[in-house]
Length: 479
Image: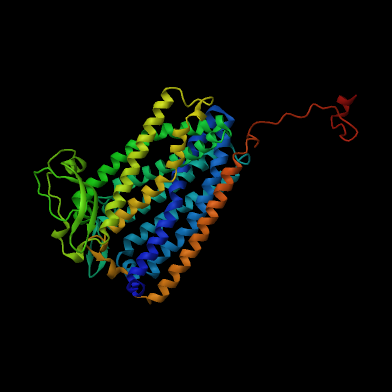
């Protein structure tokens, strides 16, 4: 019950709830927007009506995610002024302006062109509509860029100094292009794209197994598979680069990720802990399964470490992350899902090469299609666990090495925070149920293949006029 009286812990729980829930929706909108650009571009190039109907069908799921993302994202940002006012006051000159860029540049761009993308079919020229779709995709991914700029700055603050507890910007571009920024942006970009690809692929696989619109959805299945062949391995590589940065810039986080209590010296091979049961009180692992000499290959692609891996015992207890088990297993869940998706992509690509994904035979690949359905939600889990590693592993700092989380929180009555936490929990639960209901309804209904194609004229009826259908031809033609 002590946690219910701790306003800092409750504020952290509330922000974690809103962030984890909000993250579910922009994951799909940022990645699916790129897919919509691809299929609409293919329609404009080939004039194949299937691509047009794909754009119309998947845009329904896009707008559902967009709406809930907006509804859940605004309360999260408001907390910087309510629950985290000292933090906002200290770093607002930079952090606040970055969030302002995200709202004014990215969100407004996406929202401004969204109406044209959804309702402009047949009302604006095809080229203008395609431009709107591109702008929506650009705005969605620009939003990801600015959010990751802000968060990466919290991980590796740069571009200024803290004077009497307030961050003074000396070099704005150095702050934006802080050491973590590039890999963070790329890692999240590929995470949203990969998740979206496997969601689209999983839904397509479900239709194929149900033998509904098999040829139509085998087309979308192959599009996302072709993209996944490039995206899935790249995501693993970018993830490795991100782990290297943690190795060099955040030693306490790396120690928590590996549940490493003792320092591993440089110049020696280091074992990698696959599974363990961390015991924070005893400062050890109660048991562990280790792979000999693997940690050096993971961090530096060689057996011996060039730098030591500091153990948690090297740091005062007040400077260590808490919840070591959560950080340890979140990282392994994220990594395991990444390798599983690569393996599924490889197996499916081989079947494609053997000609087993043709419309007439693809429905027979039941185990492969079921695996894609199973994989559809895994990207979400990988992203959420990745953010747990990123943010929980940064503790006890809000700005790494500069501002402690305990000093960043507003002094609010615990009862008020608990009340708002319960309110957010109920509200987000209702939104989640509504999203599942309307999303499943869209999927059950399926694509409307009878929608008129813009630019294709409907031929007039050739039936002879009847007494119920007066002849509307010119008088000369009637005579």
